[in-house]
Image (cartoon, rainbow, N blue to C red; front, side, top):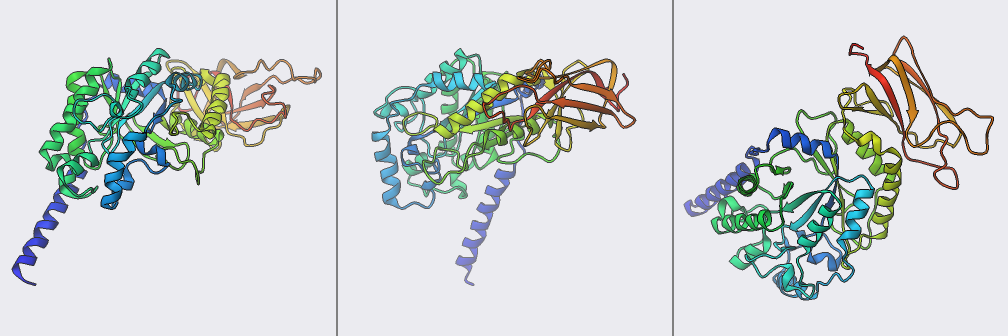
Length: 444
């Protein structure tokens, strides 16, 4: 091997190593502890991935990596001229979110492609230079704020359009792709974050995506400087993607899941989760002390696809029945016993047991032996949503739930006695409220 080639290999390895080191840098977390606790109490959020390439129904941004020059040029120069979501109405999204018990939104202001879904002075590659020509981010923020939801913004320091304008190769791994190794890019994304933090009133939450931690840290510092109360999630705390930890984490965290397989809307070949899948994930994540950030992908017209819309409707129905179980509740200490999961009313001896039965016919009674709980004096049991005094068309039946202590814990007996659908089927969890009960490891 000649010296010149050896030198090039050493330099290449050095750059790769520096890039990997930057990517592995420990996150800076200047979130105020009381604000992180506030965030942890929100529980359920709506993630919205949306950019100009939704017109083609493909993965958001990532198709640019490995694309031909012709593809890249048409993506950056032609797609903005055709983006016009004529049915976009964020008030519809916000009302649907509130009905489903969602407490905060995180909207994609700029993904890795560099297209800004907001009015910016930093680049012409933004929503104002499309046929739509209005600040979508402002419309989203205003609509969700009106419904009383906390406002979160997604932002990526990775920027393929900026690399394109610099004449650089579009990559997720080359050192110059990182803000830490590209000073003009770092200044550029910091200026964009300054805009986002000052143009839309108080921002509650910021989700910073991207390949390397240094870029996220630089942008996060801007967020905290403008608003010390902002909670930076990804970039500062744990945000597992498409997975839930096996056990509770020691500090606030947020699990991010897609409704289908893809983050942005895909018109064909998509596989959506059922509402029951989503509800069960929400229960597990909350029982483990995390927040559940569920992603929605509007189509090119600005509407949620019918699969997401109908799933959200079913979640709303379930939450209408069981909303109390998510009001000021915290992990119980024991996450679950088999298919029974727990939350506890903060500061009270009230426990909510989520019974994850897949097939529970109307009028059937089921009994559960729970070893994690014991009944205190004047223990009470009820089923959320139903009065348990009558089973429709069956006056001879007593649907009242019961609770009693056993040597191992408690025994509860519960009947599903509320008709939700005409066919009397209801595949979603039944929630039981247990008052004046405590953990078996806790004194009464």
